[in-house]
Image (tube, rainbow, N blue to C red; front, side):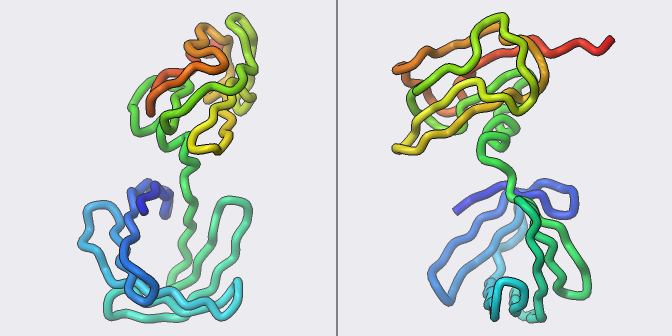
Length: 167
């Protein structure tokens, strides 16, 4: 399994592989390390990374985990897969991308509509899961590239916005 995380203000691709009792964790291009996390309850446990083991304390607020281990406190957030897809494409900020292949179920905004960051633009279905794609910034809808029932590939440009100009 691969996910993009924000760790201490820097983004990394992490890969977890293995089976129960024998997982490996790879952060970025680092060499994978044997990893074992044992939680006594939702706030306390132990973590082993390679040959080092320590107690772990954790608090979760929203999508962010605050973890105390190895004599330091770190902040960890899993990047939203839709945001990750947008970042991976390296495209401009005012574009809403498809995080996975799928089909358009509903369009929530039309060309010329003014939208705010986070406002729903389009709902897609992929692998029987509905995902609402939201506006990546404030702006005006310039182009809606797909209508309901149309299919698309991963990273397809679904909606393009004219970014709101600062005065």
